[in-house]
Length: 593
Ligand SMILES: Nc1ncnc2c1ncn2[C@@H]1O[C@H](COP(=O)(O)OP(=O)(O)OP(=O)(O)O)[C@@H](O)[C@H]1O
Ligand SMILES: [Mg+2]
Image 1 (tube, rainbow, N blue to C red):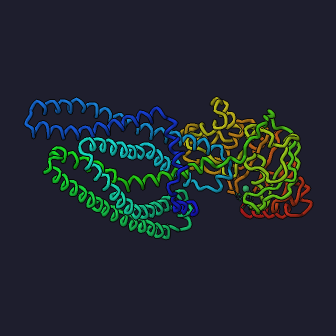
Image 2: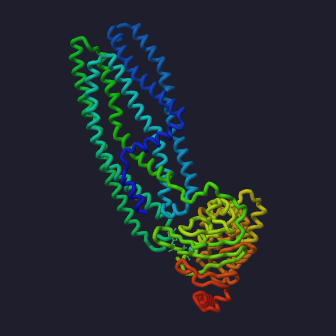
Image 3: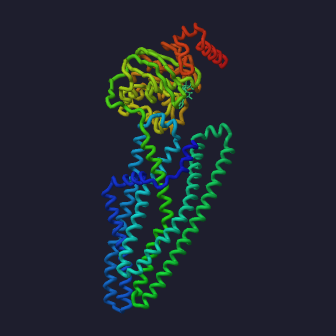
């Protein structure tokens, strides 16, 4: 997990490609973007014009004592106000719309992509990491496209509009102002660097805190059972302390920043006022012009003061953008070949032909694994934990593909078929059955939304799940909780069995949970399995050997290979691993009884 959170440290410098990609997210909605640009430019022009109007009112109205002129300018002022208000509303609406739309687009494409990504991606990626991509990162990028972009354009348009009117009033003074501006930016930019370093620190600790939170919540049972509370509290306290001191430093620097910038800008204004005085003496400047100049300068300094904040959030947003794009760019490594077909059924013999497979390179779980299963056979896999049983069925379902060799259905390499054609015809009960939050009924319908309630109940009856579901508080309409936490593992398996019956699969796979279920549930599961196994090729991974006594063939898997193979009776006769496993379990059971 740490690797993922450390990643925050390598903050992106402003990366042009990423900016361009983020920009394109906005440009996709170019009519809105165009409207937004138009509104904001007009707002800047009207704003600068109002300052100019003030100057005219002072000089030509008040000082000249011309009431008619004053009235004239006041009317213009009044007339342009509504326009100004409408323009401001317009750009805020456009910016807001753009920001939300970009967030919407990003979330949608991330979700779509996540559905496509292979299981191997999820092996490597912590859930918390994905969650923050979909939440805070998306928000930041959306904000950059709306408010960040707004700040930047506003700076450019209002500075240009101000300069235009300043030139109109007095070009010499304007040149002096232009000379002072770079000095201000220099001070601001240097300060900004230190502030950014602190903020980066704050963010780094912040993501560690989020990570600690999410791990502790999702692992709360383990935390409690291993009595880790106190240690975790201490670790967490260290993190929050770190966060506190980093935030405090950042706050200090931010507090110093404004006075520093204001010191420079006050000096700038002082110079301008002094020089204006000189020019006024010579009749080159009027009172109104001096007022206007001071206003324009204050106006232009605002973006400079904002610079550090804008720059920081822009950098964050770009880092967020990079992480989002890295997710979106992750290649889907199990893709259907362009000429992949849907054979209509995957009935027929199944062959593992010299299959080699590793989850991580150079760590082969299966090497040259060979196995042929005739149509309709029930194969049971037994063996020690970590031997590779789940891996074999993962490959069979094409959640992963062999790194060497091939798997063939009815003589055809399964890579020449579409994934959907395989996965839709496999009924599966996983080692850790997963239910979704929602009712029992919704979970049962998950694989076939079109099923009627009657069909669902019939399947539940066949699976032996009907009895316990009816005893739940609201029967089939009972909420099962996120991940089905409100049900026991055995109950979840019964629901999974019913779900598998509903899809009427060609191939049935059961990866039995190790956790012991009571004997009643066990016999219910057994009955459900018998229904599913009848006439179908079935793979049963069993930990309770009693469930597989009737399998056509039992394979003992050890270290990714088959060490024994045969029917129950044959294997017992061989007196090998299976015999040992069986007698041991038998003795344990007898002892328990
Ligand atoms: N997603 C994964 N990423 C990396 N390695 C994995 C992954 N899943 C399993 N492995 C490794 O592959 C080997 C085989 O695991 P597998 O899950 O197939 O065992 P198993 O026989 O099903 O064990 P169990 O009886 O405990 O379910 C183990 O060494 C395991 O550590
Ligand atoms: Mg397993």
